[in-house]
Image (tube, rainbow, N blue to C red; front, side):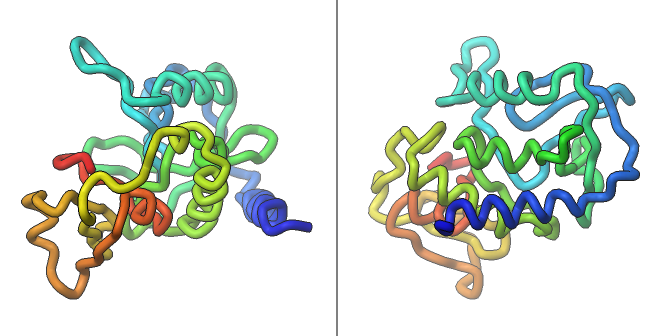
Length: 206
């Protein structure tokens, strides 16, 4: 058995350990590739991942944003889902932060990463499935599927990573310049940063 199949089987086994007695919810609306509205009128933000942003008005959708949303719709719209929480239950916007499961036990967060429709986005201290997600992301990167079809090679001479926030920045980013020496890392390319599980700064957008 090759290492790719082994990783998938291990994660399926892990997912099967998710409590089966959790309450289920119906999905009322799908906003994009990582946010839904459930029947309690609460927004649920998929934990540990970030899908491309859907554009509104004059703002264009990011690469593969529509595909990510459509896949999310296919998986969860008008279907029952269960939620698993990590260390934090909500974010600063009041949205639930959750690992979302289908009736068959498949985790939607992992599904989207494995198909290259989202990337790993660490939100400390919620790290329950970080390594599993990162393994899936690396497989998608190797296969160059979904968002990984686009070039992720060198654009800047280097990028600055913050091991405390798991974000990476352009070298001239104000936030990047504030990284303390203890937490500062340097990556030679965007691909290298993504490979280690870092996600791009929302301000400098590396």
